[in-house]
Image (cartoon, rainbow, N blue to C red):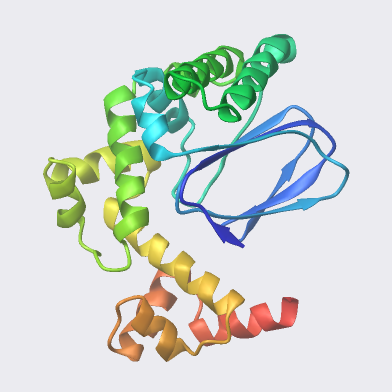
Length: 254
């Protein structure tokens, strides 16, 4: 299972498959579009032969588009720190959206002048088409500033959660107070900033438990816990299951 360092967009034009995101399974089918954020873990399994597009977008490109809608649209669909953004949309703009992606692909494969500026503008156009066609009231909610702060918090969290586990660190890096950051995160996701931090740590612990033979002590140390008993209590409280039981269940299902 791959841990993402960038945004990923899957647009399924034909076929079906199962996308596992943070150990939860989601069904993808024709005319489904899925957006994943940095730090999420994902694995795509093909049930039927898939046709469509897979786009990887760095956080820098995402933020330099200069269009508030890009951020408010994505975060308006936000449902939780563990969840992908899944949507079905009106197919009337398929040709325009696909034409934009084909132009993006061509620009990514050339080394001409102004290449980055053109890529940035084409990505902006793609998001505008998507925001017009998606069937969702959330896309029209005026969340631009809160959404931008939420997404920047998630990007920072993805980069620093192994060493920085206090809300105050992220609030300082974002030039806001811890109380304000908690208010925005709660509004956008329904959970607190500290809960988001805990979930990032738990997800990394689960990933290491699944993909390696490391002991609980080794994983705890890697995640910044010097006391294994403290890590064990943290994992149980945050995930609802003991770490040892989780490893046994994974070993049984693999």
